[in-house]
Length: 189
Length: 255
Image 1: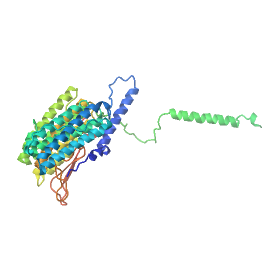
Image 2: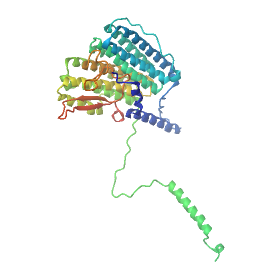
Image 3: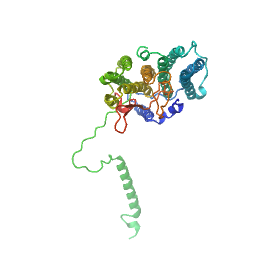
Image 4: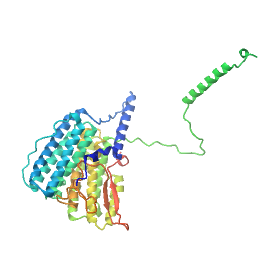
């Protein structure tokens, strides 16, 4: 049973942490306004980052394409497994579908393609597929980390960050559940 | 005597009275704040607290304090002494990963002219690690409790970086922090596999009593909620020590 749904994240803005984050952002805005009124104050100022930036559209669309490719890859890989192995691939595929939906929902009408061809994976049972999928998960997480360098909007950055931590977990889950040692996902892996 | 000959006519009285009232209002507005009720004796002069600004440097230093916390907790004598052989081997590798993150943070902090942190986060040490270790010391299932604790601890380290993205101004720093979150995320997932292994353990499930079991992939998105840790010996009512681990907040940042 998957206890998570995209709604879980939507509840986040009501949390104490979200409130604190918004308070900090508001405090930074007030500080900037106060500084701006003092024209002779030469001290450095801090500009609060924007919550949303149209400049992020192309980057986020490229992430949607990558996530859509991951969905297609899992859809293809599911054909050769069954039982608990299938349940794992279905769960991870549902996560990637949620990422496509969340990113395209964030962009709204500016969202581009939400489908993409599957990434190349050698067919086989779970023990063959899982390490390959783990490598794709690692590469996808790296793509998101690189994208963060250019993403200006805070809302998009926090969404991408919440995807990165789980894609790292995907990698470890696939490696260890297919027979890899716990040490293989630790330092240096 | 008629009104024309009066020294203080009714009209003059109204004009002068109005002028006096207006002057009173102006003087009151220009005056100093009301000092309040008179005070008998001497009272200390209130000193305002220094303004604490949550800058990117503060977040980096705090992340480093959380990494120090992980190293300290995983190296605790009770934890290493009571852990299973598998857990001990895994934790030794986790410590190497955290030390690598600490070194990376030191470089970033120093390059920005900041001072790196060498001590564990004080609040989190007191509120989470010390309490968990004390409970595990008396536990009837110390090996199991250690895994539960380490699973949450690694989760909270990863969640700290994720939470800080929303507070960080510099996009490049957000990216750097999330690159450091990957290791702890994987350690948390790997520890979940030590608790409930195989493909069955990846998918969320509940036991016969309807209680959630530990899952390697419990969420589609990284949560920023509390990470519950239930450890220790049950008391006479069957209750165990419950610790809700949270990412650093305004009162636990390294300013």
